[in-house]
Image 1 (cartoon, one colour):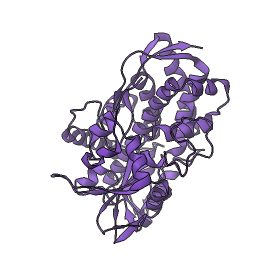
Image 2 (image 1 turned 60 degrees about the vertical axis):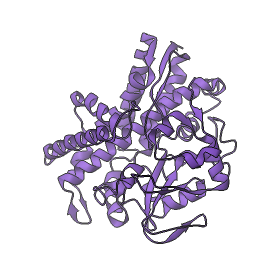
Image 3 (image 1 turned 90 degrees about the vertical axis):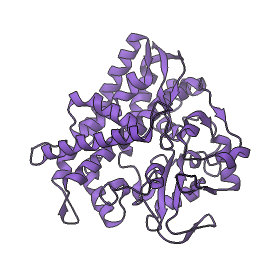
Image 4 (image 1 turned 30 degrees about the vertical axis):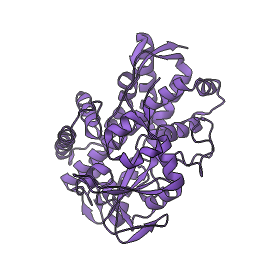
Length: 408
């Protein structure tokens, strides 16, 4: 259904794992398997324009790096794009790239908005949205599952949380789709930079409007909160809204599209879901493992240390690859098989340790709603044209997936 060139381990010496085109157009399964077995901590050499970096591929080593924010800090940046460019100016102010006491305090503030109880009305809205979008797609017969179904679900939920007006949501979606990746192989770093800055400017204005406004959304929560005894300024509110909108939209959306493709390409699992042989909760975890929408996370070594026996110098970039760890044979039985009833399922799709994904509960609810909707409302799915990948070294998945749906 989708065709990508398989990269052989013998080609490893020619690969730059920071290349978005490599991840979009290639199947790296054999390379990850080779690295886990023979070079679990691999050095990706410097190029003419960017420094080299460590590539960590085994599940145990990945979780060890995630767990240890003292030795491996996120404050130099947490994705290759910013790490290779020399760092992230939002370090210490945005939750995802803040460590230590400030991270703990900021996370505590935001967790109150992402608790299961606080999210009850959002999750109920998600289920209604999934039902409406799937019924609309069924009425049309043909749809682009990415644009017509998946795109409207996580963005709607996070915009509800942030209080983004309905009139602005299509514009915000177009910006988030360009900020971390692209549907276009020729998209440039400048395009992404412009999209990111437009998101920041949008939330800067929204944050100013929400101070003392009486709203009850996350922006108002941040505006009225203190971390370590100090109120958050407009920049900090803006940066954390930016982080939430990107983290809450792109990854969940790509998992939903990947779920539809996975069920299409594995009819036995599609039928197991429809029969109830695989429950929604376990199916969600397997979809998260199978799709792994965030390929990697980045850290910087704070001092001379080692990973898996390999010496790592202070200041060197360390990347942990969820895409590999989620297929580690040491943790997952037959990891190359999609098994919706897989348990246990210790995937690292939501990271691990102090930076475990703040929105994990909401993402699980969103993907679960899509799987339940497909199970209950759709009898058959057929791919009607080529799917197109997202071009990114951070995000993995499909930007388009044309399908014909038949109602149950």
